[in-house]
Length: 189
Image (cartoon, rainbow, N blue to C red; front, top):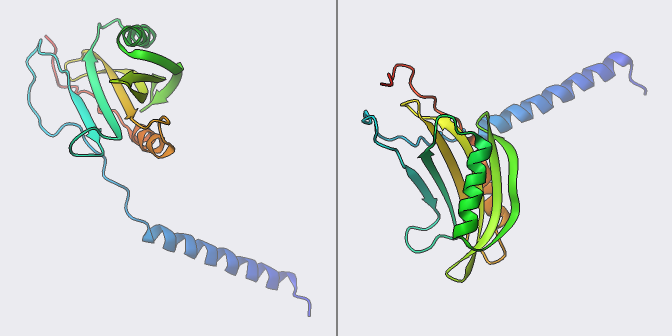
């Protein structure tokens, strides 16, 4: 027996409601999103003229060399510094200091945390062993309204280069980064 249009419409609505219920049930069963990692555990007033050369190091092992690590560093730069000149300076410094440097991607534009950045990918040798790195650079302003160069570096010690799992780990951190703006009530002398 052939169904009329109203029967077919009622079946379609029922299927859509069942699909929506399945999606909602799946969302409710999903773990809550992770809490963002904050890089500032402490709060204090930094004296004017004292440079912040903070490094955050994330490794997979507690002792010995880690197969993959992620380092976030920052360094103060001139107020009129621009990203392109800072990126070229970093490349020049690496060319002069890293043994057997090979560029996979010398300088690609990208966006990170809503600001323009540059991505570098390269290999080099450290104590005879191949090291593969991806580095992202961008400029920001600290709490004293100084310009800072932020460098995020993912390092793999795998002989074949950076593994796909390591790339996923690196970019999962990069994609979730958000800038913490400097406090507007800080007065620069």
